[in-house]
Structure formats: C-alpha cells, structure tokens
Length: 279
Image (cartoon, rainbow, N blue to C red; front, side, top):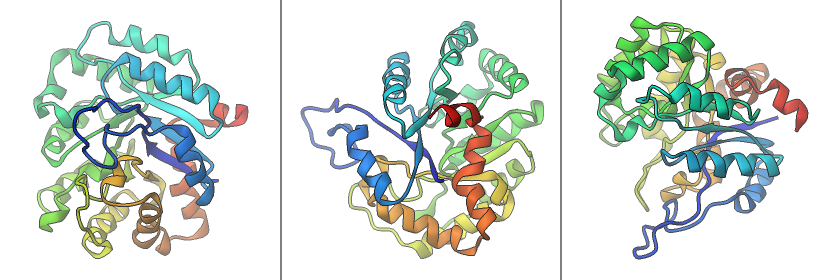
C-alpha cells in the first residue's frame, strides 16, 4: 500500500493569462489523477488545501466522500481568529478531515508568534491534532521558537521547507532542520523538491544532498512521500517525481522502512486507521 501524502485539486480560476502546467490556468481533478495513481500502484492520497478558504474545505471534502482513493483532507482554518477551534470542531466531525495547513508560505514569519495563533496552536498541540507547516527557510527560526514553547506540537514540515537547491546552499537551512528534527513529534514530507517554475531544469544530483540530510536527521520513521501534484507539473511529471523519491530515498531502505515512508508514517501521523477500514 502506498499513500501519496501531499497532492492538490482545484478548478481553474485564471482565465486571461495562461501560466502553464501546474497553475490555476488549468483544472486538476480526480479523474485526471486516478489513472496516474493506478499506473504507479499508489492506492490512496491526502488532498491538501491550496487556498486559504472554508470553501476549499468543502470542495475537498466532497471529493473525499465520492472518491475511494482520497483517504483524507488537510484543510484550512484561520488560526489568527479566536473562533478558529470552534470552526475546526465542525470540520472534525467529518472523518475525512484529518489535519489543517496554515498557509504560512505567503505570510510573514512573525505571524506564527501572534498571540491568537499561539493560543490556538497550543490547544491543537494538547489535542495532538495534525498540522502541516508550509514553511520556507525563513520560517524555521520561528518554528524552533514555537517548539521550544510547545514541544508536543504534532506537525509535519512540508516540502523539506523549500531549501535553496538552485544555489546549492545548505546553511542555515541544514542547522535549523537539525534542531527541529530533535523534537520527536515533528515529521517531514519529502515532496515539492522540483522547481515551481515552468520548464525549469533540475537534477537528482543537485537535490540528493538535501534529501540525504533530511533522511539522516528524521529517519525512516518520520518522513513521508508526497508528489505535490499538480504543482510538480511546472517542471516534472508525476512519474519523474516518483522516480526522484526512489533515487534519493527508497533505494537505500529496507522493505520495512519502505513500508514506513510510503504508508505507515502517513497513516499514523494523520490517524487514518478508521478511515482506511471504511474505504
């Protein structure tokens, strides 16, 4: 069994300008992804929100209810809102709603330290509720500060925090990730590694040092496979992303470790046991 722990669906919203594959100039929906999953023997996916709106939650949950391959939805609530947890309680009634992702990629790093955000994160930490962190390297020092205050936060770092692969720089990203990996509740998605620029070039060799470090500091029990489809289509096919994961991660793992990174880790992090039984 394989779970793609990170993919998106959306309907096109950009009518005037064609921004190319992997953009909102095109719709990306389950009927397009299903044959690709079948081709690669991938059984289930986690659909992650791609815009900060409650309407996106409803859109993805409706897909999850009608598609057996979509095992869970990582949605969104406004964490800088005193009513955020009440809103979240409503969504948690749906077993497909398995986590949230504040879209910090587009926010100042200091947003995470706002009093309301800290209050809500603390409550979610107490509940052991799954949170995806869409971090860039600039967010990592703030994430370290938060973990110092609430080390029991149940989080996964998306896309290995988008290190500067194009410039081959390792620091300070590497030191920050090493510190974050010291917290046992934190996991990391090896996803989103190819450039988010249409037609951009990349090589497995240039990506390998970053993946090797993540695998070394988190270990096979705390990493997940994610395709980041359709965003990956800007510079790579789904097949190329699968091969990249094989060439940088799974080629060196045992059979049981492969089962962890492809299936068990996502199942445990998002608490999918009951939903998997139903689907």
